[in-house]
Length: 137
Image 1: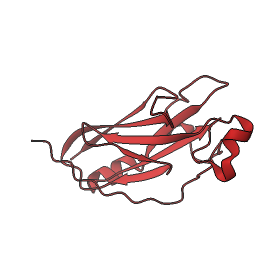
Image 2 (image 1 turned 60 degrees about the horizontal axis):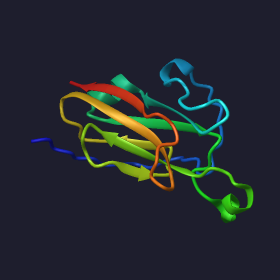
Image 3 (image 1 turned 90 degrees about the horizontal axis):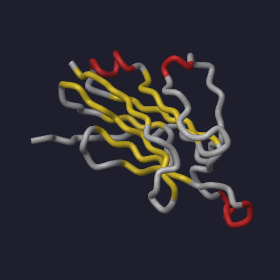
């Protein structure tokens, strides 16, 4: 039986993120997924090994060329693309949110795949999924 015990901590999101430059090394991040001129997504596991030792996976995502919310109904006026992020651990129920940081706690020992997807308001993918792997000791 697969036990899905998740607790999320939402912190420091960028609701209208189009692009954010980070001073962190790009080696921790997946490649940008999606067409150069369209919506793009990348993701990483923050402090992967330290968090895994505590049965935690802290996921960060960045997007560009897309809004993660619709401030003052900008979309009807500009035609801008609006999306949400869909996080999922293994086969557990997904978490759909506009938050760019999410922490999964109480992960069982073993190998886990965390997927991050950028989806449109119609629930269709805007980019390929980012797949992140973590081993909980």
